[in-house]
Image 1 (cartoon, rainbow, N blue to C red):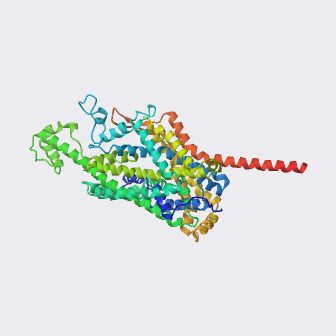
Image 2: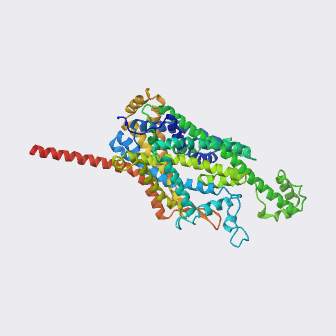
Image 3: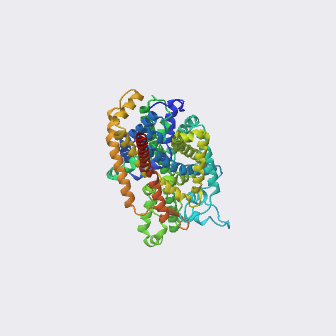
Length: 600
């Protein structure tokens, strides 16, 4: 492969590392990893997580960087250079990244919405708004909580199901427009402007996390959350789901299969040491997940302790009023002793309390696991509203979310733009700025669908089904291609050409054996799980109950899920078929010309 002299490059290797860190360290580190820790037995989850990093994450990350740096092309061109029949692998990556671009920026729009609402003397999610008669709080808010009401009603103005449509939420649409304008400004001059931006998007979130850590560990009750995180429940290691979740978390967190890493590496100098960088970025990414979990669990502990003590206070007042006791008789420390005592001495009066006596349990409070947007926008904002100077913490938190989200968006958009700008017919008629602008505009217009009243249900659908299946398939094909079609020997020669030394045994064993076997196992597990799961369901917001209710997707939505799963994966066989037919037609055309020349 000849080196492309005119291709733009990063100013220095540091920019490339920061771009990879900014891309890999995203919202998943802050909200998905702590949730998985909580679900799979606290600190015990780190064992399968670190193992999967070594067996699956680092080798695949290394492979994608090597391909990008060697071929100096985006995903479509790089795979086509390896084999003309494999352009579809790159195309599948582009389609998957396109899906991600459509919905991922909606999260950034929500962050903007919350950020703008943080500059108020009382945070709008701290208390319920009053109804139109100004007599009492809005009913829906009373049934739910102020934070849930603000998210579902004020932010999303959500409908009761995916089938009830409504107009676009103007506030959200403007926030989404702002998010896309910023993404466009970040990538306007391609790698030259992105290289400058990543200095900020990769480093500032760490500053916020450190400030939050100092604040978090000094909060009342933070220790309860930390204990919960670091007490491993080893029985969870026998659960296969723990291992599956550890592998998929590594996989998505590093951003494998999207084509972003290939695109980033294609702007490297030919002899850049990507081996060292692959290890650094993987380690930084995983360390960030653990670091963010400590912050999250200290805030979790604060929130759980706050709720637990509020519950004890309600029970204390109930007992004082029911049994006419002096104010200082019962304290939070001896509530449980008094419950047992009064039950023994006044059984009839105690029985009359009935359902009014709540059961307060700190462990149960800590056990309620919340993932995804629920953790970021509901649980966190609930914890923030109880902190002193809550506005400051709110502003800091949503700026951090924005930078994490924007950093990942850069990678997603570059994964779409780089392969497109490598296509001759596009680069001939369009400048980089025009192409970047058109891609951003296209994503913005389609993304407006997520700002409608039922948009959040479509958002969930894209989040659940838009990438998982296709990425596993794409990366499996990538590994098999590199090791068995392109050949591990040729790959080894390429690496030696770039780095000056051969592949060591670790990379060879992982890439040729361990990683493909793990990927096949994950792929089979995913398909079996999907089939056994029955009809796909989603969480629909019920305003009468003030909570989410599990609802089945209607038939047309199920068909759309099928389309989402198949659309990117289909690119691979269809593109292979197209190349085969094209070659066959060319060959038969040549034969005909030869015959006619001979006969003439």
